[in-house]
Each structure stands twice: as structure tokens, then as C-alpha cells.
Image (cartoon, rainbow, N blue to C red):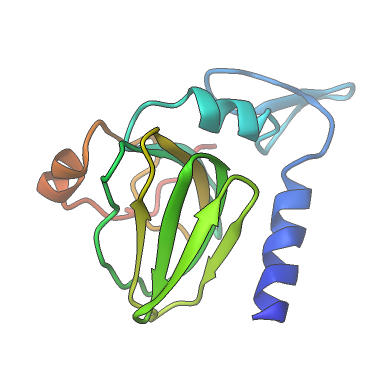
Length: 164
């Protein structure tokens, strides 16, 4: 688990390179002109987000998604073929990994290795705001699901198309 947290920390740190960001696409512009990547206030974006799922940026090997779970709402038990990292920005909840339940709150990180049955549940009375990283990508670039029901009905998956 320690190695997974170190890897996730390195990924998050890489997203924090100081360049000015294009708010619509997530593409960045530095002093030398346009460059690839995503550099924005992820905490602010996660806290402002009210959608169940919104894909912000998709690279070849990594995808950034913000999520919001209403009180008592959950992602739903699932298993991915990809690794996943969650960071809670607001609210309280529970992470369930292969049946092991752990209370989570703002500031908590959850690393889900590929093949792990997992769920994130909002156990509080306020929205649970978080962001997640998939490595490699799991969803279509730019997808927005307003509710868990919308996500389930869509049944979409990453199609190989990236943000840039």
C-alpha cells in the first residue's frame, strides 16, 4: 500500500506544475507558448463540481475526473482493469476495498489497485466532493454524468481518444 501511495503522490505532484491554464480545455500555456497537459486548481474544481462524474483531462496513460456524491449516494461496487486513486476534498464517507470498510473525510487518499472490488459511499449529510485518477484511462474523454443512474445507463468506456 505504501508504494501505491507514493506513486499516487508523485502523479498528483506532477499535476501541480505552475503554468497558467486554459479553463475550458485544461490545456496549459507557459512562457514558451502552448504545451500539453493540465494545470488547474484541482481542489477548487472538485469542490465546485456538482456532477456525479466529469472527466476533466485524458492523457494516453492517465485520466483526471471530478466527482460529487449526494448524501447517502455511492459510486456502486465495481472492479476495474486499471489502477485508481481518489482524493477527498469535502465531506465524509466510506471506502470499501475488497469488503474492508474505512471511514474517509477531506484530505484522505484511497488507492485502488486494478482488480480490487471497491465502492465509495457518502455517509454524511453534505455532498462528498472528490477527484480521481485512472491509470490508464477508464472513461471517454469529456464525458459528464449528472447522476449515478446516467452513468449506469451510458455504459461507456475509454475509446482511445485523449484531450489533446
